[in-house]
Length: 213
Length: 368
Image (cartoon, rainbow over all chains, first blue to last red; front, side):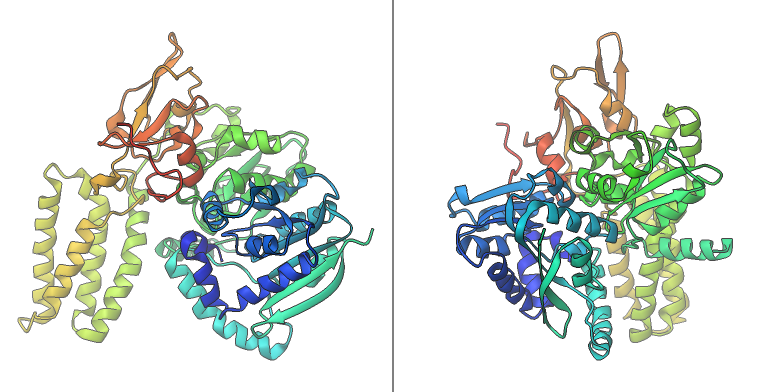
């Protein structure tokens, strides 16, 4: 969804429009899975305009939010201007740089609509790094655009994808690339997949993985 | 792929280069590179990557393709899609560190508008240098051990470049004109397309080479050409539909900003965008980073004083590369009213000829 990023103030509305409101449902479920109780330390990769960050804070989490876009972070800052600062740390860095954060320091790592913007090699690197940031028993929660699993859904999906991609091209540039098998990638990063939920004809997924050792 | 296939792909991609044309970011081996081979970085625009690979024919090198959203190096760097972040990401995640012993990489010089070399080494330990502007100069640059000639540092805009840029505007515009004519007035199709092509090429090949006053001269010739075209297409018949269409098109063509597609006017048709470079001589420590990256050779080295001089400001196209690179923040953007955009804001928000010029956060402060 990078084309929405070129106009950060329109990003949230654009995401809701494109996902028929499901992006908010994915983020609500992500916040619930990452912060089931108050007081947990959560690392958010690619926080964007802070929509998920806000939900995490509402659930009492202490959040470290990383995003590489200064313009996006400005949106997030103004959204969360009224929130107590000691529960929230901003970091203007790329996802790959989470490798400099302390090991096993987080109860959960979350990313919503961030992984589909990465190349396969970047995604592999970042997912592998998330494992190291989690304490044993901690959870990785990733929600993103994916390729649907069922044949029929895939057909409908590819039909709709063409006009969507065309709009994206005309408006500002590129599009994100739906992830072929998100659960498998979470597994390859050395995490045990606990659950997977789907929305919007299987084209949005929320995968929860756990660090067992 | 065959040479013909390659050429066809070049032609298609240059026709629609206004749209992104991504290739997978990551690491590619060119030739048979080993642990001491040079590391070159570029963006993930397919046409660029193929051209770089062609330019490296016969050499062994590692090519790190940074995720620039399928946009070419200069546009991506100016628009915030090829910044320090993307280069750090590519160097860390592409796996190049496991392939080579050294930590030196070469970036295209035109990436200097977006990528800050000192920041890259601070964040991931790689020493990046700005290589030549053009991919075709890479072999000579490598053979000279990374010493650039003055010509390698300059953006040229020769006839081949002009034809390529004209084609980029002409092809999609002609397509739109053809579709509009097919719907509204079919006899106009051929003439409309021919005129569109002729005018687009004229803008790029002739416009800046005309004597002043350019705009009236060019406009006069264009209107005359169009009238001839209209009368041929209508065969003396009703010109009520073609004439307004043509007028609208001509007006658009002559007033359009052509942002960033020529290194001539730099999108300066609108005075509110006419930021100039402000140089603080006191702060200059003679590092010459600006001199190294300026694609228009605006700076002179004053070696005895360890300073630079902004000697040819009139050539400046406001790409912002010097502002981004200067390690002592001696350069900034300034407009006629004295409003300044400080280097840190330029670096983070890409305020330059192509990037966004206004942001709410860290908006330019008035100097008065």
